[in-house]
Length: 447
Image (tube, rainbow, N blue to C red; front, side, top):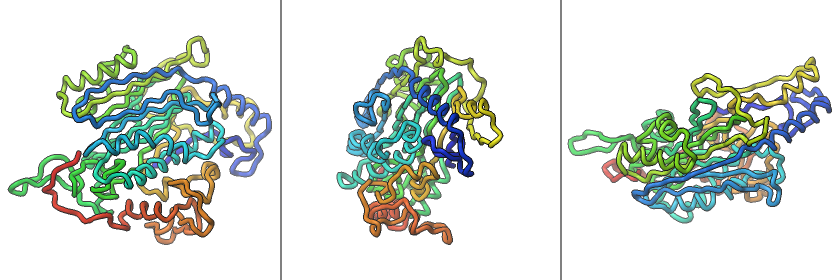
């Protein structure tokens, strides 16, 4: 399910009217801007650590704590961390590591303010994952990779993931899952999606007809339903990520980003408990050693730990009291009425100091993921391919809604639009164009 929570009903960038047409008082707009600037200035200190033990040498990481989306503009700074667990070779993992962030930034319209950039980021990450996968097809067909990619801007954390690497957050005494396992065993919906698109999902057949092991997609025997790469398995193994965006409280928190070598041995609680109180680098090492001690070194085992630490001496960043809970996000949907007083309006545009879910969507359909509600949709240029960002002439673009599976609800004239090659990619992912024939389940597995 896709959700986005935001203050008010008007333009995310601070537009002058609400969806209902009533004007927002100038005083409120000015107060909103002051609050936005103050929030942007409240950037926690980031500390990170990495540890890995290799078995196959197919885990790769991306660590870039000091990025600027607008070069030379410190207020546009953000941090990016990624983990890529390759299989069937390391080509897809290396290619994704080298290109994914540039593709994300290329999919975000230039010169957005911070609030609009954060609102546009989920769609841009979907487009970038698909573009990276599509471009990699020109390089190789037989390699694939999981991806867990994290962008941190102030207290806002945005995570996009495919595969079975995971990102977990501990904040205010609760644990939050910011990724999802795209294993066939974990999701009947993914089994149904791949089967309906023409894939063959089942367990390995052995002599005598018995079936063993996890559910896999054939040919190839891949046990993951979403990755980047793996074109030899079939294009119904899609690169469309789960995207979650959350805002931390000023107490900060700890992120653990790890490959399945950790999560096959430890629960999130065990990983956090065994490393609690340690600085990030020591924490990452402890988590990996605990996982290897538990199950042995059966796979590449990699862990990134990122701490968002409240700024010292900043009263606004001091830690609030812990809130009881089981890691359930507090969604904030606010409506403003014309009878609101000035002081009440002030409170309406100030964020509560809790861990707050801003956005979540895992749908595999690009017609949904690349479309956006107002005002996000107006941030993107209409005649630009929503995936590869190539410029389109008005008569060249193909609506992302073309050939929709919902008869009677087609919007062929409506954007966003795709170029011809990206439209073909979309159709292949949805099973409307077979990429290759299925073969027996008696072949070897690739993950």
